[in-house]
Length: 470
Image (cartoon, rainbow, N blue to C red; front, side):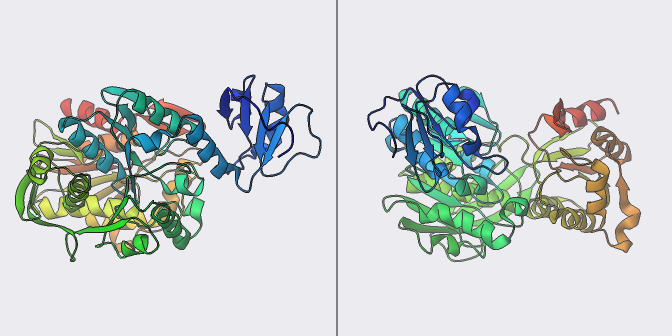
């Protein structure tokens, strides 16, 4: 440490533009910029203390400098302390995995609300404090926003908070300093290799969350996933498992699976759910298991679960007046797309046509593009490849990457339409009564991100508009 050891801090910032007189500025090395380059600007804006990994050679008088090994980790701990450790004052449950996180936290949030608790939720779709909705910008917020939200929850009497924990957030120390009462692993499949570089590093990121759980917490994992037990190898938390196919602490069996919902046997009790598909059977079992581990009554939990609906944009469907089934799903990874298409395949009679509209996001993992196209071709009768969120890339280039996965025998059933609205419109034009349209990739999103601008775009809204006027 250089400078005074007794400094009164008014606010904590890691963005120099948000610094005000009396701020502590934490210089974090990010993926696109290094906060150390903005220490001077932070001091100019009024910072009185700097936390950094490298103290500047030219120091400013009356400024306190604190050197740390990891600024990102320090930011998490500092933010938690600044807001009086809010995560220790409620039961914070984190869910991590490639698919299912949003559905999981949404179901838990709604379940515990109906159980009579004051509840918080931090998710990809939205953040909630009981009935108050707060817009979400990231799957897991930055450490300062996260602790501020938790502080607000504590001040409002919230007893339980359910949060999506992304692999990015784990690696970037956004959850550093938080005290979790439990952690849940859903599954892990190919995704985010643009960030993690290798699948092994992606697995290690997920595992790090469980490695950090305290002994008084629980660690619940899906042992039907081949990497499920990996998550428990070094955790100090109480180890628990759930599964549909293997021996586990919590078990579930699918009795019926149809568009109207699922009939399940959960730990010996039959229950009906409005949710559809095997992947939702896993979600429901994980939610049930978590609630039981939190001390809730089994029968009461199953009774409420039978009436709950999924998160927006997750197997979100309606049936048009002429009997066309239109489904919107957030499936943007190979495994998620396969799960949705397999679910549809298991439910459909076989006489109808399944038309899939799918794209891949720009500035993200290129390796999954041909894989997703290949999956869509094998499991659909017709496929329309289109734009998702192209971001800074050219949509045509993304589509060309996807087309590399199309085998010659499937080429005749594939169309490429760059404009997503036109692609959806074409799918609706091709559909006959009782046919099924799946629009995959964007789910709940109400925008399309292209060339630095976000334009209003809602898959379900467009489907309804076209099918109602067909």
